[in-house]
Image 1 (cartoon, rainbow, N blue to C red):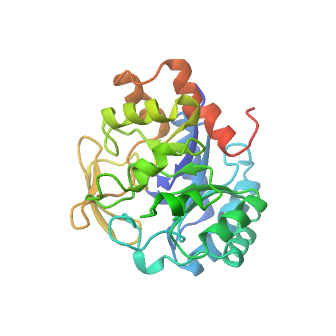
Image 2: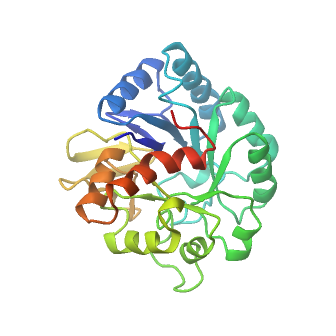
Length: 301
């Protein structure tokens, strides 16, 4: 089976948002991700300083071209800095490095990336979000709403395509009726991206998301972190997170009371869907291969 993962933050000890990232680090990580069964993936950079983007985006773009990885790595996912800085919604990201979205800033980031930005996570409630989303579409970038506390009206005001890891990137306590989960589920135009690693969402919630969205509006991602492929233990990752990777694969920051990405790759996320009998093999192919291409308006080949 082929797998196209739209959210890989790193793996095997390599963090794509690390200030010391090298081209060799990236290529070594990419080789191991591909050898583990992933066919294509988007390296994902999280909320970081502007200087980090100026350094790492061109570095990654050059490494991809120099090592013939254009098919396997067809672009980048930018998960931040245009997200909420509020506790819970910001998740494991550094709130001090979030910033308000502007079309000018997005165009600068796309230039840094050599035109390779494919997917942008955006909080709908932020000033400038509608204009930035419109700019993203003009640049050929798919817009996904996430790490937000937006209302239904704020979400409806954005020209968006998807929802980044629906059910996550939120406070542990939210309004039982008025929250981005219900708003996202109710919007038939938005594709739900979910993390089915067995920790981010319980099986019964995934079942409900499938019922609401339908298989054609579902994409599974791994949210793999730099500790994916490493043994259980305590790690420092994503800039400001001391987290524990437990024996069962849970990667958790006790002080922030939140997950810090996952320790799984996309084939393992598909295995969870099989184990819980949530989707048929035909449907799994759609959510890990066909639908990611459709969401990014790319041809499958």
